[in-house]
Amino acid sequence: AQTVTQSQPEMSVQEAETVTLSCTYDTSESDYYLFWYKQPPSRQMILVIRQEAYKQQNATENRFSVNFQKAAKSFSLKISDSQLGDAAMYFCAYRSAMLDSGYALNFGKGTSLLVTP
Amino acid sequence: ETGVTQSPTHLIKTRGQQVTLRCSSQSGHNTVSWYQQALGQGPQFIFQYYREEENGRGNFPPRFSGLQFPNYSSELNVNALELDDSALYLCASSPDLPSTDTQYFGPGTRLTVL
Image (cartoon, rainbow over all chains, first blue to last red; front, top):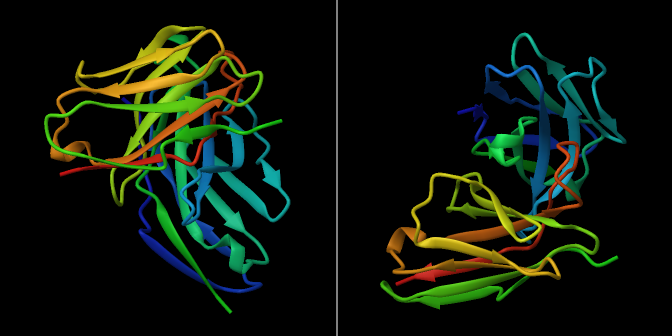
């Protein structure tokens, strides 16, 4: 089974600064998808960004970008120009591209991001 | 377009009881997945339904069961509740099975077992 590790239980960033959240994963598969989800206190899991493993180009969504290193099995999230609304739990997730996996998401334990004024 | 909705928001049960949680998928979505999120942990995959058939299951005992209806709404049933079943239960829908589809989550149901 694939495992996802987020080694930073908590991170803090000042408003307008940049922060990077780390994620590593373990897999023997070559085709898969990686995601970052944000979970604010409201509990609803919100998709931040998605990366297909077969794409070498790093995904970008406005202030959010990833550094995907396939050989190192690393998938970090960079948040630029941090805003107070970015404060939340951030989860890294892996999903196999194999049909027999049921397309289940495997989540890390999360990183709690605090944004200070 | 309406998002994924879940009911109830909160629920309190006692050990040994049975519970049913409900999920309405986002319009046009025919795949639904259920996850259990214990306090301070990431969500754990319970099972997935595609067009009313179970399409995959995580490491959960048979007392966790589900249904998906023709309108693609879904239920999660848990029998013989245990204290460790206390968690946030999340459902997520996606447009179809092709693996490129992203799962969109509902707000969850907080279950407390006393």
